[in-house]
Length: 135
Image (cartoon, rainbow, N blue to C red; front, side, top):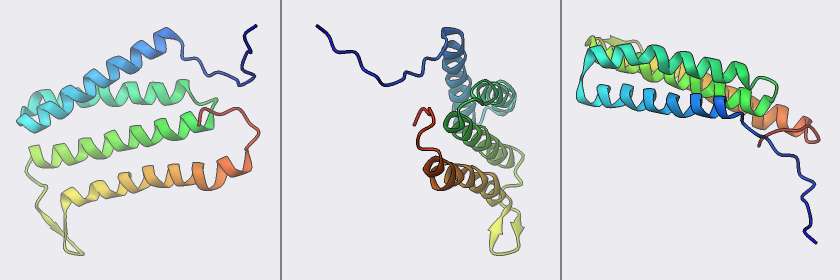
């Protein structure tokens, strides 16, 4: 007789998984375009990449672990896209105070993403250990 696990499972509906997989395709096209300096393709690919990441975050909002991670991904894509645009439009090397350049402004959203994950792992998760989560 097989013993069934009492552990709850988090199942992703197939239509959501397909969207997540398509999101990866768009993200890779954006980054390949950045690497190859294909400016029009890179700029256009920001739209579907960012839009799908926002949809994924919205659809997973019932689980704090998923919401925080998916928000961090959305913010990461935003920071990454700003960095790409700064290089494409050649304002990345303009100096700003503190010995930094305009591309370093991408550190603001990157840091925000880390703060969201810090909130989840350092504050929320320890206080909600008995709640159903994916991580």
